[in-house]
Image 1: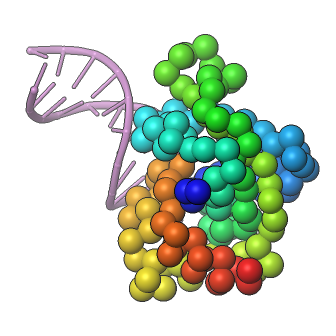
Image 2: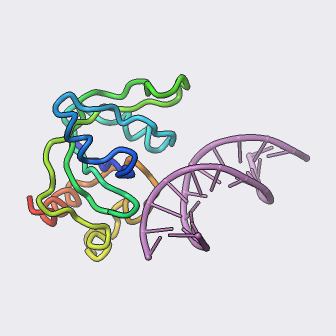
Length: 137
DNA sequence: GCCAACGTTGGC
DNA sequence: GCCAACGTTGGC
């Protein structure tokens, strides 16, 4: 199983909305970036991901699971763009702010630190465990 | 609100 | 195929 990170502007699509969708989940649509799309193509059912709020919050707030493989993005007719579906699994007891991630030397190579603009990112097993721990899981 | 970093576009 | 110009994102 692989780990990922999904980034969203909370005023566009927030964790509360994701949770409200329940086990049905929701398309992670609107991605218009080849790198991000290519990562979504690699995802398998059951892969886990962090849900990150950008802008004012800048925190990892929850954990999601991939519940549908990559398919055409329903928000565009452009066949280049595809996305997976994800569903909320659980909230982090303690959201992990970007500042804490940056302050942790073992997380210095996280894509979130290295390339903050990429909206869908891979996360290593070690990074996953550490951020879960920092979030109180 | 500003600006740096990055990706995309289009002219040559 | 290169590179300048432009647009977008997101941290500060």
